[in-house]
Length: 453
Image 1 (tube, one colour):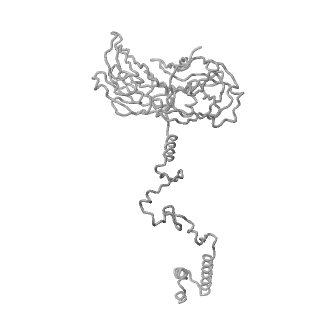
Image 2 (image 1 turned 90 degrees about the horizontal axis):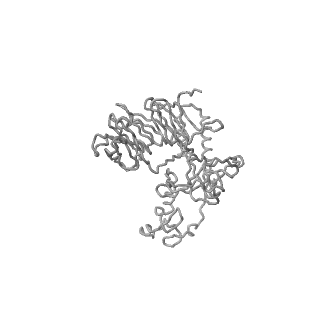
Image 3 (image 1 turned 60 degrees about the vertical axis):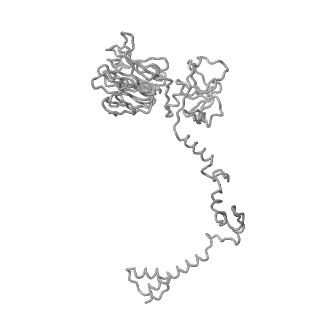
């Protein structure tokens, strides 16, 4: 009876009392009723009197507004009722450059920023012009441009304004700079830091590139781009002015396979000194590697576009290409066809991916990942070994399972071995000997057998 006589504002209290399983006395009921009533009065007072978060509008404030459509006061342009829909469509405003001459979608600044962001985020490919450089530069003559040097270990910049920051821990008097003629000097590299240069990529766009760990040498006659320093930062450097002459020799038949920067593989009979066959490659890229098998009359070719192609020289020119593999994404350094009845094709690209192909299968049967920046590979004809050489003065010997058998590296110090950037590798046909050629005009021979003294 008491609950039914309460006002509607006490309805939450009535529901709570009726739904509760707790048994209360009439004294406890009055206590809870008074508590609820006090809470309701406090809430009502706060809602009416609390003005901390409230903003009272000033009378007549909207009369100071001017409509940009009709020119009258008292309302905004978006609230204007006199403006026609045609006039609304003609109104233009760009929020990017704060201009009323165009809209956001047509803003040149927006398009320029989008293009710049895309260019900054994507990977770039740069092409350097190959030219002859004199061994001795004329004293006092400053050469323009950036010279690519495979032997230099650091970038060299002559203009201090190209540096964005410097290494404060660098001490010029302790840094020794060794020149190409072997002369060592200290104190000519004044500072070290990050330099910003402008390069044009293969699409013709000028891109600002950061050279990490560059040396500031104002007395040097030429700015230097170090291949080794770039590769240490994850860059891949490929020298492909052209594949030049690529050959493979068949000892059993006396045939010489030749190709290169052409679109055919030419086969010569060395005994009769005449051409016997031309095999069209069917590609627009140069041939970088050749390997043949006289037992199966097959020729495997690696190309600059990353493809590996297999030809059967017993077939006609239009039918001789029997298989094309396009799994490599970069320049094929070596494609080797094993001279066995069921021999596989082993190929490697500059990205370091070694792939094994069965000429009867359309895809690779095994993939091994080695170091990037490879420049040479050779497979032992008898042992289950292959060796990879890198521009980063590094040689690794693997078995067919991808296990590292041996590492040959560059070591500093008085007694440390020094090897240059690897240019070619060759295994002995029978013994476990490996011949290595480098860009510093040296050739080294390594063996698995200990030399007797």
